Amino acid sequence: MEHLKQFYGVAALGVAAILFTGISGTKVWAQELENDASKVVQGAFEYLYLEETDSQDTGKVKILMQLRDGDVTPDAAQLRYHCEGNAESEIVDASQIAERMVTFTQDCDDITKTIVLDAVMWTENDTVYKVDFAESQIKFDGNEEQAENRAVLYLPDGSQREISVGEEIQTAETPDESIKKEEIQTETSRASYTGGELFTDVKKENWFYPAVSYVMNKGLMTGMVDGGFAPNKELSKVQFAVVLYRMEGSPEINLFANKLSIPENASYAPAVFWAKQTGLLDGFQGSSIKLEDQITREEMITMLFRYAQHKGFDTQKRADLTQFADAEKVSPSAKEAISWAVATEMISGDGKDKLLNPQGSASRAVCAAMITHLCETYMPDAFADIPIYAKAEKIAFTAVNRETGDFTVTVSNITASDDVKKVEVALWRDANQGDIYWYPATAQGNGVYTVQGNVTNHKLHFGLYQAQAYVTLTNGLRIPAGTQSGTIEGSEAQIRISQHVNDVYDQVGHDLYACYKWVVDNVSYKKLPIPVEPKAGYTADQWYAVMAFEEHQGNCFCYAGAFYQLAKGLGYDAKYVEGKVAMAAGGYGPHGWVEITKDGATYICDPDMQDEAPRYNFYMQPANSPVIKYVR
Image 1: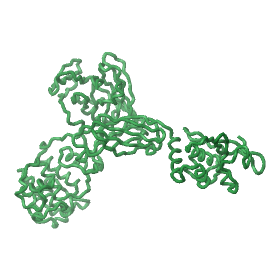
Image 2: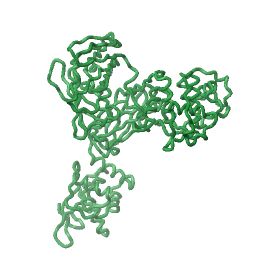
Image 3: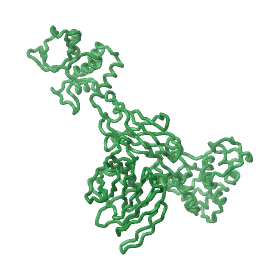
Image 4: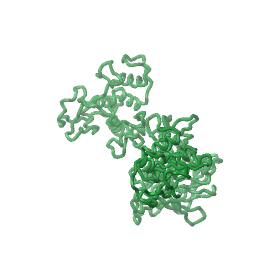
């Protein structure tokens, strides 16, 4: 943690930028800046914070910038900064760009220096954009030894003042601009403000996105056990009663004073009993309400109307329902509520025909939209945003097997705003995430989770991998909880061939002759150029073997390459040979075979010739008296 005592100056263009330190939890909202008309600027940054790196890499610090919703992920990015007292700027390239997060990994050889951010530059589709940070900087002291959190605010006129966390700052106006009030506060419970995309089945372009984001952030509706919101799933009366009960603050209810035929120990019982006692369920199937009873659109609106009346809101507005072609389908008991909903623009009709569809089922997305409309219309300040965050203190590549391509990623010390239901890790090497693979993590106890990966899930890629941990909370939200990079070393050829060799062993056993017969029986001859240029990273025998194993055809060198790998895997002293063999028409032609040395003697194995002339034995023929003449 010692390296987090470093200071950072920060501001962002067009939006408030936030810096989080890993020690104090201090949050500072930086002032909004004016756009510079002389620059072409696209997008900005939603927030900026410092992340502690692996304890084995204490000489580095990560600066992470979260792109705003809707911004295009850049192709590349650079951060320019200078050390206080040294005007010379330094540039660091982004070490990772993924999940709308741009990560800069900065060397930190002097933990006491003050770093001032100068500019951020990024590239999208060959167009370069730039954001210059203002002269106004905010400097943090994250020193653990301080009795209280303090900060130093630098103003445009060169002045500065020390402030306590929580103090509001009002700065004087300058001739050119009005410096807005700074808001400095301590917030340890929330790492960022998020939207409905935290659910796996909600996207920004969905019509229900704003409403889902609202009910999620207010804690009025939660997600499903699979991490989704299930926007199209039909809602039951019981489930809707639970939502209204949450809005009411979940008051205590006398469960014994109710005659509804539902179990008193059911988790939803207090909500349903409250709804019944409040009159929200009047006229709804008497005492036979069941968990699976779906709610219709008119029933949902009626319950909302009664809830608004229960709260004492002004519900006098009415609309003429005759404008809707299916108005006659509205139940008499629901007409007043439907008329109110139309008048307050809670509903406007479904589809191109603008139908009320009163008897139609109501989905979770429709519920979210109606709840959001009611809250924003009648009680816009009633619900504060709840904490929503998750962070993994450490993500590490803890084991790599070069022989098999297996590796282990460990995620530990997770802090979150709710109980953790599951952890997943997305891994990839390609910058475009073309080889991304999602792994479910296994809990090991003490807050440690591991995933077992293999390079075969990533197109047999080796090199620097990126790991993104996701935490799914019990409320159904799946939240990015941290990133880390790690190197997976090994050989694509070695892993690829090892898999094929083991597959053959699984079929025929660990017997040399059985492996020889497998090559003879499973590879057919195909004329190829001589020689074949192997793929980069492969020797000739490896590339020929891959062709034989995967295409089940090839020339004599493919036969020999496959058998050579099988023999070597069984522990034999085998050699892959490219030489010449006597031709029936006279002379010699290029040919490949395998030589095996055993008990001081050398033997020739030629599965290609065995395929061509099966009446002869070309398996383990003495090298000094072969069936045909071989020339090395």
